[in-house]
Length: 446
Image (cartoon, rainbow, N blue to C red):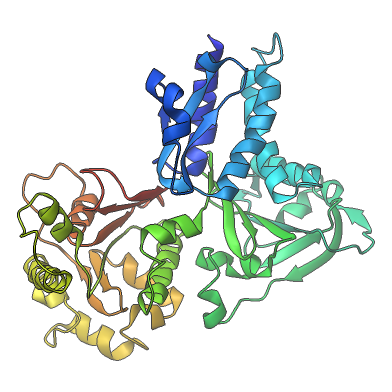
């Protein structure tokens, strides 16, 4: 197999998925000749060059509609530095697949702890091994942390302890921790505290892992193995990496929030943050969901496309466009959502229960655990950017002839005037909007 083909295969299997399913591999002469002109726009990078051999003919390019963050570019550089050693070493073909996989882990470890990455690498390899192991017939759940600012003397080394079977049940995987210093010496065995609701609103981590995520900081990382075999890494109070279904993924939370419109001012910021966190919660519970997100005082994606196609008068003022857009939006929602599913319906037992029993009918004011339960109800949940909930568990009237599954068809229907989001039972998140090309996802989180 040629070097170029080996590099392309490594990128397709290990590098591109790290930045999300929507990351594409490009390989043509136009890209090579015009890379410097098209890779970056307005200070944001949409394309990365993978150059490992010094031969331009072996270069591979990856592209994503969401710009690559500075952190993602550093992650790529760290992994590619390791891969360069592999692809420039003669006669390594028989070892390359194993080396490429391990090099990806080394790159991740160096991002998490540039100076003491060996300890991180040891933990990642251990948890990868344990993810396919059992203890007394049960899958293993486990959590361990590294605190690089902890300089206390350790009585025992973590890796020595983990040679004993009892180590596999020492921690819960979500709220109890073995804490190690940078060298891997165990300095504490403790319970991580659950943040209160106000603090939890800004911890970008799935609900069960809030205690261990909240414990982290710039120099503190937590590594968790869940019973379903996922490996999750937390740093700076957010989910940083996860290995799910055999592949590593970096969570670029700010990039996903930006696609939902987080830069806008006002109440929508808290609603968007609540919506995003709830998507993570449902995803890691392995429960499906369908969500529609709409702006109350804005031109909808439908109207933008209508104007672009010149079906709407070009000389209309912005105020008139907003008014027309919102009138059409509410008419559309009333058309596709049955009256019994709308929260303002006073004759439905479901909506009466939700209006009277919930602590609030504003989505961002509802506790995270309850939001996840609401989103898991069969059907779609529709939310406006001010937090008001239009419907919960709504079975939508979707166009006939759809070849998509039920959730995808519903999400695409909601995307006509806002953002439609599908969370699959396997945890995969996909968002669509009419402001993207037909059929192209706004973003995906594997």
